[in-house]
Amino acid sequence: MEALFQQYSPVALDKVTVWFKACQEHDIPENGGACVKYKNKQIALYHFKRKQKWYACQNLCPHKMEMVLSRGMLGDSEGIAKVACPMHKRTFSLETGENLNGDLPSIATFPVKVENGFVYIGFSE
Ligand code: FES
Image 1: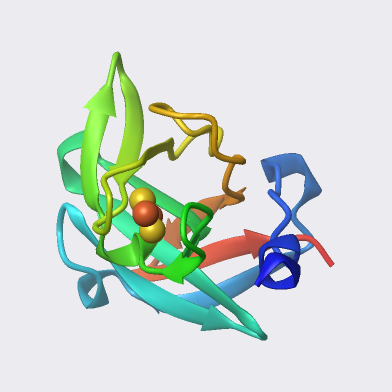
Image 2: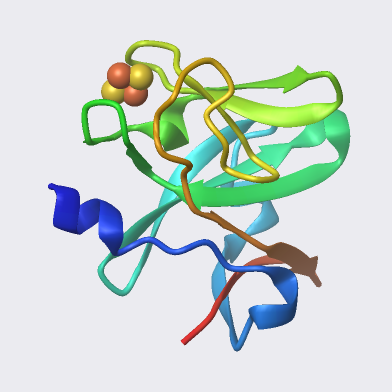
């Protein structure tokens, strides 16, 4: 499972080389998320409607190596969007991937853009 975790590297907006067309806007529940598969990776994609923003991160929670983050609860920590893992409520910044209530490794985050009703996730290859 550690190897699985190492598949994920965060991608900064200026490092995007591929915009993957993930789905249509209405495929993702408002203020919720869904899991999207890109090659061998599971990506959690969120429509944080209350903030008028979209976020993407690895679906793998580093606590027990469960593919569950797409089912997490969205929230806000001092203005920073965060997701709480549905299993044991560890929270992660959706901006930086940092674990906000513990010392777990950061999760990988990915840029998201919406164009003409379609949602794209940025990867670096
Ligand atoms: S598996 Fe995510 S907090 Fe435990």
